[in-house]
Amino acid sequence: MNADFSLLMPDRVLDAVERATTQRCTGVIRPLPSYINRVYTVELDDGQHLVAKFYRPGRWSRDAISDEHAFLLACSADEIPVVAPMSLAQGGTVGEVDGISYALFPRRGGRPIEPADPGNALWGRLGALLARVHRVGSRAPAPARLTLHPLITTTADLDYLLDNDFLDSRETKRLEAFGLALLDCITPLFEGVESIRLHGDCQHTNVLERPDTGVFLIDFDDMMNGPPVQDLWMLLPGRLDDVREELEQFLEGYETFRAFDRQSLRLIEALRAMRMTYYLAWCARQARDVAFLQNHPGWGSRAFWATELSELEAQLVVVCEVASRFH
Image (cartoon, rainbow, N blue to C red; front, side, top):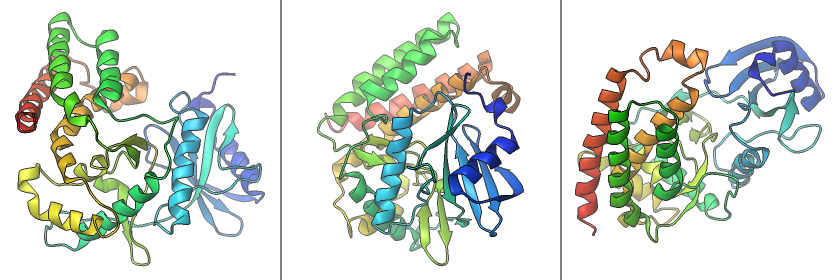
């Protein structure tokens, strides 16, 4: 049987949770927002609420999921505020139902952070939190996870877009020219840069705050190996020249727990261009999915590609200007 989310009915979710916890469920099950995976809150008879996460088939191997869990458990062992997976009755932290891997997590509520105010002490706390996560991340690799590097991830993203007929011939030439120029410009910037386990998708929406634990990180689904600055730039509310005060507060908190290579700040605009390319490829991989098409009706049109290619080319100008200072 091929693994398929269409087979994942509520009764299969509840059965999986009951087997994994050896407890009965009340039957209360609520879906949580997640396009890639299927995520639910489930209530047990004792009143406890769990989060059941079912991983999209074909996206991550079991080893890659285990890398995510190992990182979370190592952070939790160091008393870092993350939400670590629970041990399952059948052993380990990864279960399987109908060929779909799943994991259980304790439910942790929190409010989204408000990072806009540069005078907010939040920036120092964010820096301290990420430094502690990175200190754990530096202790071991994640061999089954992606490594963020222009010649690995960005090359693969460009190849996927160019090899699958998403663009017409003129647009293809523009994307090819962009890709060649980008790789030529940014690859030298990554020479000698530290690569460790990272959160990988450290947007402000993945940072919550609670009165008891303060700020904490959620959703390590896109964890990867890469330069520590990747987890910094996605939190910043603007370009580097416009957020100096926030950056200094962040680095002050970070360097309380771990040294930060300030030379790696030169990677930020390159990483932004890589992220833009990655997001296009990520969408392209879902482009034939009915739910994706319903939510993105204009994706792939000529007007769409005209806008996206112009934005990529504009970012390339910024990237090359920054890179020229370091060559």
